[in-house]
Length: 258
Image 1 (tube, rainbow, N blue to C red):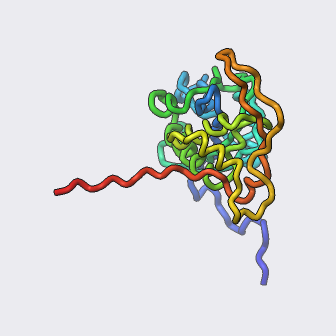
Image 2 (image 1 turned 180 degrees about the vertical axis):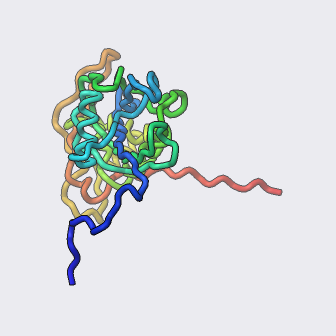
Image 3 (image 1 turned 90 degrees about the vertical axis):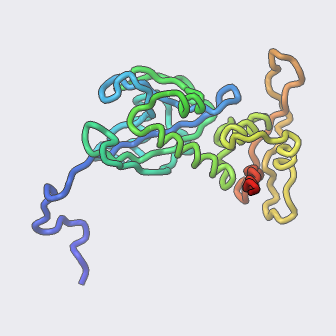
């Protein structure tokens, strides 16, 4: 015999269970002047008034989590959510929010350029911070240090598994721009010649005839420092098979001899 579907069970008492609120927090990562940055807002209200934090806020009863993330991002920073906006974790430790019992769902967003930033609603200011500074030196509200660190780890993992690297650059890009994404997230130096070879040479086992990058025949704008402007490329279809670059593995340390 089938059940009653979506109807409320007879005698169900919601007050018998502890209540809690749901929020969303969004980690926006972008590359700026060759360094990995995160978009942060300065809180204009308590708790943590005046402290930098990830953009986010409470989910409304009539919206999905994804809708809440897009709305909060737009309202607090003026940024339209990019194509790459995905959940990567949930955080609900007791006492993480002094106002009430709050569970937050964290999102990772990646984009090449956030565009014009505009603080709104309860955000007093908005700006891009170098990730290294935000993680090591900047006091953040709530448990946002933990959330930011987890987001960076997730992004670093996805570089080796998906086409996430291409979300950091524009429609056309120099190979050095793409290389900087890997070096920043992996905290490792990559040989430019090997990197170029990885992107422009497909292995014999690759099923797709597409390449990882396709030359556009154009070059970037000349740098004030001089020198020949770099060649511009577009992402090819081979990213759907497997990413071209493997994360450098640090050699295991040898145990001290007795």
